[in-house]
Length: 98
Image (tube, rainbow, N blue to C red; front, top):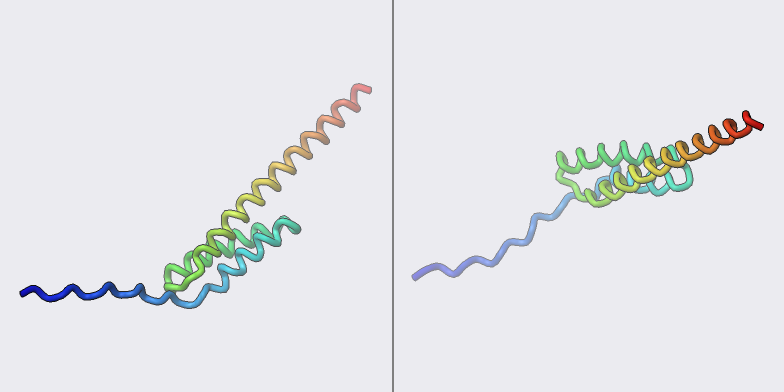
């Protein structure tokens, strides 16, 4: 006679939410108004993901969202600066011939 299979065990409860992950997301969202804050969101996001792996905490999705949003905002800020610089250089180039 074979023993009855045991019911599946529920997953181990995750630790508390990492506060650095929440800070990463908050800084990245703040980066929409204050662009340098997005850099803080990226730094906090990387630190949070490392802490989450070592401490077995939850909040990895918050950290990942902060990283994605932070990198996207930094990329858009740099693109805007390049476009602005190109417009300024073009205007001064056009003005030189007038």
